[in-house]
Image (cartoon, rainbow, N blue to C red; front, side, top):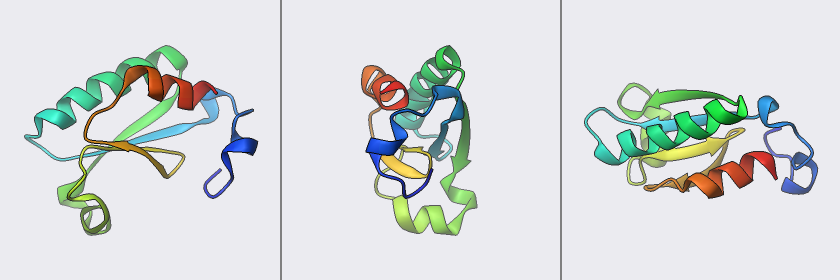
Length: 93
């Protein structure tokens, strides 16, 4: 799915999507984002994974000023604040 345009991805079932939450320990925005990701992904049956920016130099270099960052199928969806409805639309639309 990575690199595929949104036009072709929109027919993908939510269960076939993958969400990654790039975060770090002690980040209150990250905790808030995780609650939203857990809720939306849980309701839609979407696989998600947390990634700790302090344990991955590549993620740190790319996103250290933007965390938390939400990736959908490897592409950046949002950063700082996660909007529940926007995430849901991105996963189902």
